[in-house]
Amino acid sequence: MLEFLIAGGPFMILLVLTSLVSVTFIVERGWALQRHRVVPPAVELALEECQGESELRNLERTCQQQPSALARLALTAIKHLPWPKADNADSLQTLARHEVVQLERGLVVLEVVVGISPLLGLVGTLHGLITLFSDLGRTGLSENTVVAKGIAIALNTTLMGLLIAIPSLIAWSYFTKKVESLAVEMETLLDEFLRRQYRRRVTKDEPAALASAK
View 1: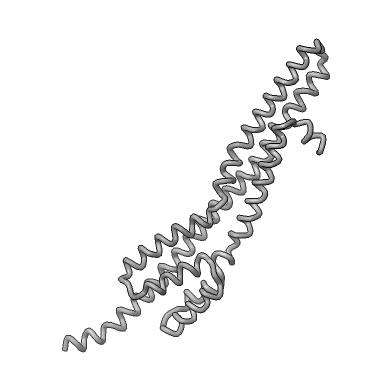
View 2: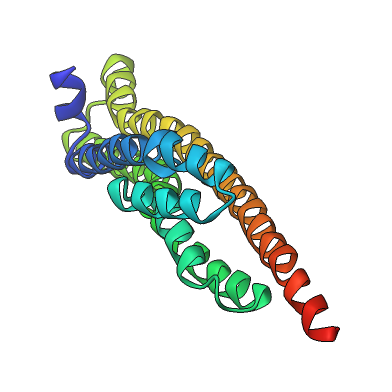
């Protein structure tokens, strides 16, 4: 393996560094995008069970104890409950976009790695072939075994570039879909929460409105 890397020349060093960057972001996003870190079960349950004032206080306490994307959105929704529903929903959408950007952090790096790794590998191969034929031209050697070995070594960087790009593409696709799925799940939970809270407010205000009308 060490001989394979050394034979790749200077471009192999760039590819190794690229692979380290890719692995770092794959591990980091894999850890950060675990469902229980974005949508904690306790916060989800408190949101679903929230009906009256006591449940609302319990939800607020739970969100403060378990900071996460869903918790921050829920706290914003609670804070803005005195607002009209449309204004509260608009505020939530603005914060939700920010949270999604945070969840997608690092995915652009994986996307760049997917595009640049094969190109670096190809440039490394061309560099190796140019070096090989330049050396053959100077020395006058043209044995088939020498040429074949030189070409094989030159192709090492192309292989390495593909070995980096393919797993990075898989990870990028998986994490992108994961973020979309989590965003839809949070949107559904918060939409139902707002609907229940504003319906409760309307129901509570109806008797007072009827009494004043009389």
